[in-house]
Image (cartoon, rainbow, N blue to C red; front, side):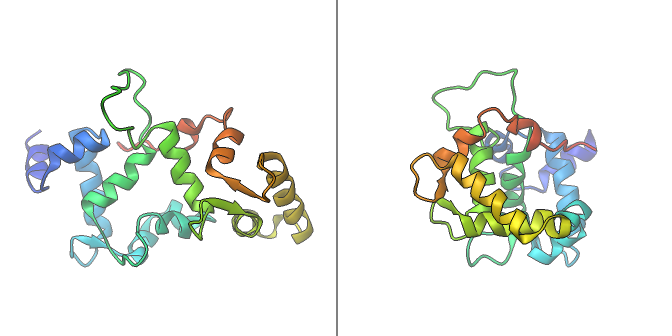
Length: 194
């Protein structure tokens, strides 16, 4: 426990960070160790290329988009607090404690996870997933497994099924509605203590 307290004492505003993200002290220490391992140059910041050391991201067909989600437009580095805030989206939802209506929605709520996933598709940030954006993701994910014609058919069918207002794009509300029966918490959760 002394090691945990020693590490926690190095992190400014750690109590506030734990409150905001829901991570325990053990999680924060584990994430801090991971952050430091990725920060090869010991600058206290990570660049997109530093994430290349994470094998699962490097092998993920949309890994570049996931890495991009850590960085705001024009931002070239991410500090530890921002790193933790993004990873909090992938923390399993806490079903033991009821949501306090006076508190903001947790970053690991179903809606927050869906918003995070939505922005991986909505690359131009216009609030809609266009056919072209959907095709880009499908190409990345399916690569050589299907023909271009099959990809286009999948994209067209997906938009046709999800596009309730018939504007040839998928809004966040339509995205959310189309995933109502999907266990997003399970699909977008990572065990942080390994």
